[in-house]
Image 1: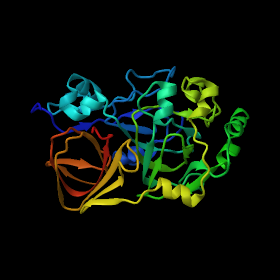
Image 2: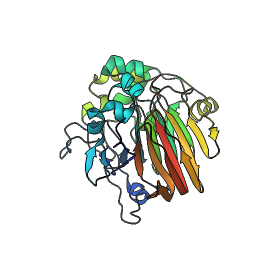
Image 3: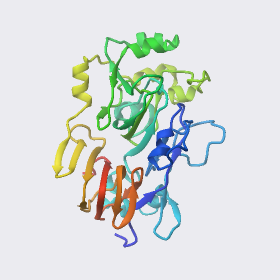
Image 4: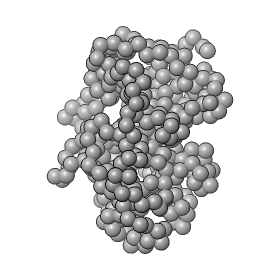
Length: 356
């Protein structure tokens, strides 16, 4: 592999969405007291995925793609680097299976209001409707929260009563938002908790949630709400993602679960891999990705891997190979490179699907 490869620090990469948020992202990046909520509530981490925001006035070119800070002080789009030499930046086994695709997308996300009730396709449905090898199974690691409108942070997910496509579509056509939300489980959330949302499960992030999201590398989001919180009509393509109002209901899994069954399914227990190193979402639980947490209280030597991954620092400050780092920093870690973390840090590793 080329000797000029290195761990790449990523620039902050805010992306426009349909909902308000982002103040806590400013605080996460050390801009305490300076932030306000707006329509850039997500920071896409080491992203090689285009954001789907059709017809948005002022949409920047290549929105969603992350820029890397190179050792010589210049910048480059991460996807361009990978496409120029996929075997070097992704490893030969990964490139042989996935080509130039990293296979995973991670985000910091801060919601100041409830996100639209939505669903993402599983892989089978994504292949049928979007001709994509990836669906959009995702997982959330709760980082922090804030009370908004007197309510503590929560999420909605899964059906708590029997739902048919016809019943769901009737409420959608009536835009009975309260009625659609009432079909789902409402779960209060706290920092450190993890939730796995497989493709096909209806869900919505409630107001006041700051989280890291790891997901399959697509932006396919089917929305059950046709207007944003300000009452503006959402373009139909952003509601049904181009598949039409008939086919969008094929993306849902119409499965009813009790609260205990749901939590058992979506909140796996962490598994210790080594002292201070845990697997939060395993490949045994989903083939789509793995999420791991490393807690550093003094110093940790991180061995090289044969797989690339995204490293996000979520607590504290310290050093990475002698370079100052802090909460909110993000890095792309190519295969074959070891490094040392020191100080007091929590780091989340976002791993792509297995290459073999």
